Every structure is written in C-alpha cells, then in structure tokens.
Amino acid sequence: MAYDENTAERVRKLLAARPDAVEKKLMGGLCFMVGGSMCCSVSGRGGLLIRVGAQAHARMLGEPHVQPMEMRGRTMTGFVRVAPEGYRTAAALRKWVDRGIIAAKSAKPSRR
Image (cartoon, rainbow, N blue to C red; front, side, top):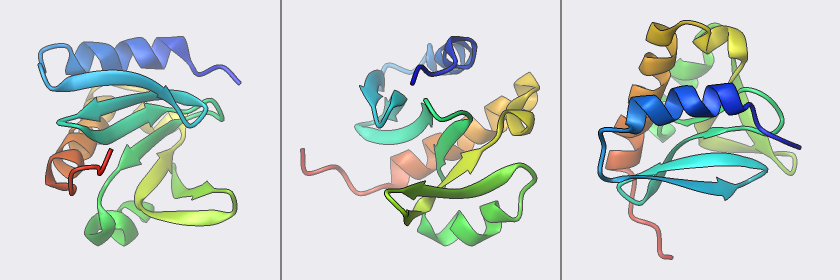
C-alpha cells in the first residue's frame, strides 16, 4: 500500500534543516528518523505514526483524531496513529512532528 506523497513532502520540508534526519521505507510507509530513532512515519494504511514516548502515550490518546498504534494486533506503547484530520494545517503537522522529534531524541539508541 502506498503512503501519501503529499504528507511525506510536508514532513520532509519540516525536517529539511535537520542534518540528523533520514528517510527510510519501513513498516509499509515512509519512516523519518531523527538522531537514529524513529520520529514519525507516513503510513501506508493512512495517517501518521508518531513516536510520543511511553510516558506521554496515554495523554496523547486523549488528543483529537488520535488512536493507538497497533502492529499485528499488539498496541505499540509510545507510538500513536494520527488521522489526516489531525494534521490538516501546517501548524498541526508541525506540532506532531515536533512531538516526534522530542520523543526520538529521548529514545534509547537502536541496537542496529
């Protein structure tokens, strides 16, 4: 399933000035890494996957247009799925990407 190219380009522009930002095709979408950790992903299933961290997870689920991220029937604590209505404006998208950056920077480095 293809991801939304328009959303991918919007995220790319937000991360363009970051030398530590990298794109990778992962998990059926286009993943954006910051400092070696996943920040967000433009999902092939629709919407954005955003890393929010385990401590902020429950609070983020209370935000409009947000659902838990599920992978193979398992809820992934620390990540949420945001429907397109939740990042329609530039300010809303920036808010979610900034949350992803903060969570990625505080994540433990990957063993890979």
